[in-house]
Structure formats: C-alpha cells, structure tokens
Length: 290
Image 1: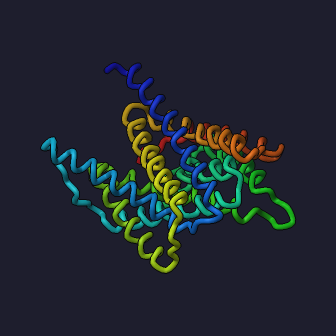
Image 2: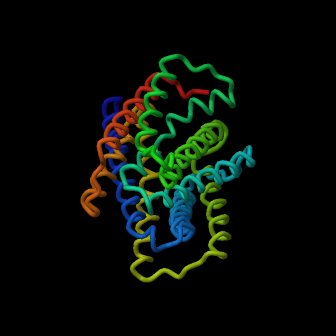
C-alpha cells in the first residue's frame, strides 16, 4: 500500500475513532447522574480487558509471538493510574457539563505535553509554541465560565482529565520504545481493572438491565475508539491524527444538540475556536519526539 493510500486509511480510522468517542461520551452523559462513576469505569475496563484477551488469543491461535513482559513496570503503574483517573474525571464531568465542553477540555492533552516535556526532560519550547499555548488557555478560561465562583468546578474535572491524559501519553511513548504495544495495553487494562474493581467494592450499585446495556455499550465504543486510534497512528503522522482528534468535539457537540438540545453560548463558541486553533498550532510547531 502506497503512502497516499496509507494516509487516506489513517484519516478514515481517525474520523471513525472520533465518531466512536462521541457515541461513548453520549452514553456516559445519559447515565452519569444516576450511576456511580466507579461502576462506569469498571465496565469500561472489563470490556477492554476482554478485548485484549481476545486479541492475544488470536495471536496464539495464529502462532504469532507474544511477549507480555514489560520493562520499567513502575512507569506502567503510574500510567495506569493516570489513565484511569483521567477517565474517571471525564465521566464525572459529563454528569454536570455539556458534552461539547467536557469533550473539548478533556482533549487538551496536546497543550500539556510540551509543558510536561519541558519539566521532565528540560527541553526548550520555542516562542511559537508558547503563543499557541497562550491562545488555547485563553479559550479554556472562557469555557470554564469565570464569574463569581471563579470557575465551573465540574469543568475543571474535565480539564484535569486532559492533564492526566497527557501524563499517560507521555509515559506510553517512553514505554513504547522498549515494549510491544499489546503488552502495554494488556498491563494497562489489567492494572486499571484491578484498581477500579477494588474501588467498586466500597461503592457498588447493582445496575438495572437498561443501565447494564448502556454500560456495555460504553465499554464497546470506548474500546473501538482506542483500537481505531492505534490503527490511525500506524498509518498516518501523529500530528495529523492528533489534529483530527478534535473532531471528537464536533461529534460530541452534535450528539449533545440532538439528544439534549445543548447549545454552546457565545463564550463557549469563542473558547472552542481558540482552543482548537491553539492546539492545532501547538501540534504543528512542537515536535513530540523525545
């Protein structure tokens, strides 16, 4: 397959991943106020762990090599905790924040990655990246609705989710230099499943048949989103895929309007435009190679 075909395939995977993400957060939004977050996260990881077991089983059946050993395991534990908390905070925000706002704030990880690399690796950041980051954070401030309460607390959960996602991605890129991608996924899902199971023991609520069906749908579409994103990254440059991930905002906004008649106000619209423009400029100007 030539480069042009690979690029088209990667774009298709990225767009489909955004649709899957939009469907997933829509399901979460529909039950977030009546279902404990830990239960939603638990089912998300149950489905994902079953999926990775199927993938590994198929590799065994096809007599393909499997290496589940993992170097730098403490980093994997940190990554798993960061990834799980990012998901937990996003789902918590979805109970109180419009779909489009929660989605946008949780996908701010490209803005935090340069700052993490600056702090951890002591890499310099050029002026164009600083300008791009400033544009985006002005947009974030508008979306957080500054007022008498300073900021919307629930929206802050979504923003912190973006920061934790950036930490998780940073560690994954470090781990991927020495470990197989499926090994990283297996250990991530396993650790997150164990932790979320332990949390759910103390805050368990038996879901109704309807809620159970929605929980399974969240797990399925969340797993589809993750798999399609991996495939998109395998076919296309990371900068392109990261930019296309902001389609998550478009599809989430559409579903929010379709099912809950959620319409962004003027500050939201200006903030969304600033964040998307600033994030894409950050992706273009900053190289995430380290």
